Image 1 (cartoon, one colour):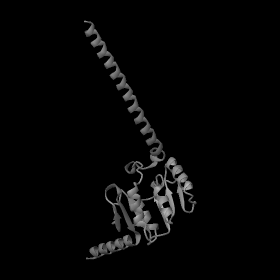
Image 2: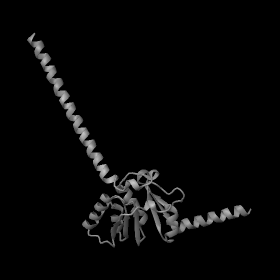
Image 3: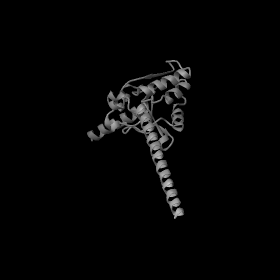
Image 4: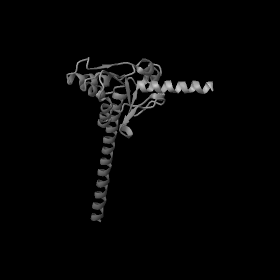
Length: 204
C-alpha cells in the first residue's frame, strides 16, 4: 500500500513538474513572439501608414547576393545613384564605395538614422552618401516620372518587383535575388518604335 502511495505521489510530482515546464515554455515562446513583433513594429510601422495599401510591402533588406547583383549592373558606370526606399542603406553605401554620389530615400526614421550612422561610421561624406526622408509614393506614377525626367544615359535598377510596362535591358541573379536593369535610351527607342508602329497601324 505504501508503495502504491509513493508511486501516486511520484506521478503527481512528475505531472506538476511537467505542467510547470509547459507554462515556462509558453512564457518563453510568448516573450520571443512579443520581441519579434516589437522589432517589426520598430522598423516597419514608422512611415508605413502613408504608403498606398496596394503597394504596402514590408522592409526586406537586400541580401548579400542581391547587393552584389546590383553592383554588377553598375560596373563601368559612374555619376549619381538614387535608391528609392533605401531601407538600412546597404545599397547606397555599397555604391558610394564604388565612387557613386549616392542618395537614399526612405520614410522610416529608424532605418534612416541607422543608415546615416553607418555612413558616418564608414567615414563617408554627405556628397558620397546621403539619406533623405521623403515620401516618393506621393509622386506621379513612377514609370512616367522616370521616363520624363531621367537623361538618356541613366540606368534604373529594381529588385524583386520589375516594372510592369518596361522591358528590361538585362538582369542578374535568380529568384528573390534577381535584379533588373532598364536603360533609358533603350526604353525610349522601344517606346518610339511602338508609337510609330501604332500610327502606321491606324493609318493602314
